[in-house]
Image (cartoon, rainbow, N blue to C red; front, side):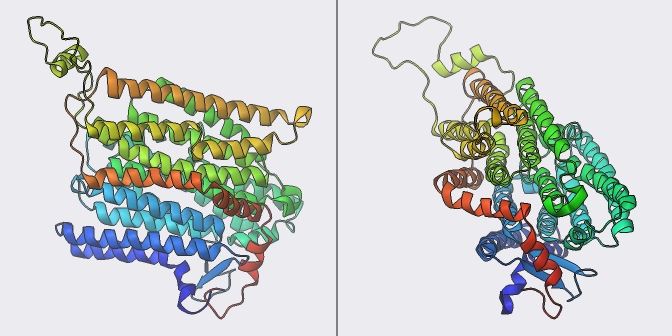
Length: 534
């Protein structure tokens, strides 16, 4: 990149930061102005993310040095394929959640719009930063905003779940600081590329301490990734949050996954010397246990928001187990699964509020049926020519179709992108065939199939209850601005299915560069001072 285009790398952080500051200055009473600023900001982020995906599709890693300091001392932002994909996911989900909030949720409490923008700022900064300290800074920006988002709208259940969420993440932040301090004390740097270069030269005496610091750091990442048993906070928090807040919060667990992908593969890859593969087995085992816990959770609940939260845990477990497999081809399939799961779970969170609108939970099914059929106290003769049944309103049909699409995506059933992603993971694990396949590959295959089966059962049971056994007493009133974001996210999943070939090629290339990070290391460490990027 050259000229003004080199500054596009920092733009995903600057745009929501300026928008959030402008909203605070405008005040919460000027809702139309803040809404207009928010719409402009989220649209701009979608456009920027689209451009950056194209820019990242090349051999070079694009580095932006704030203040033109050397990477050892300064703030470095790095754009590659993985960070570009995560920026696009955050932008698309943010745009969808923002549109949905304009229906009514933005008025449920104060400062919704600036909190939303700072949430996006923290997400984008975490995906772009090239050093551990600023990863912590952007984590805290993201989490501080998420605390307000989780509590937005007030209510006893929301405050209780939100306080638990805050305490857990404050403990995780403390672990993050402890791990970062130990790593800096041993290695003398927090730049991830510089740290990877120094991994080989660490003395045996210091290596144990360095690995301990990185393990503590990893626990902080895994808390945010909701690995079992560290992710107990996730289902109740997401179930209690308002709909647009839950939708944007659903990507926070993927920030933990991103941090694991970035840091673990960079520091403990094949070139890490004696530390190569450190913690690999724990990622695999933790991922499998998280899948098991999430599968039990989806079967144990009939509450739609908790079902969505349990689905987030299944997706996190699948990704952690795939990363723990330690193969670039498996990681490529996992990245496709990440994209599909973020879009489908975001759509599901938005859809839940529309499905339950106007529905009386625990209503007398018989009374509802009588009202629908128009039966009176006296029996009437049944005309055989008369149409039997209840006409399904158009709104309910649309919601039912969207619910079915979410069920297919979350369960990983053909022909949509969730199935293609799971197939890409499993086909690589079982490629050797016969007795040459490791036992862990068979266990992971069984976990993915059983978790999909559990999701199918849970979604079918809940769908029958919602749309058939105890339906809404009246067709819900839904605005176009509310159903449009759901349709947009589901159509993106369909587009991902149709364009699975190019998408998989892009993500596979990203996975190979993660497992062999020579370009990343060379781009960050060898980029000369004298310009913000290259």
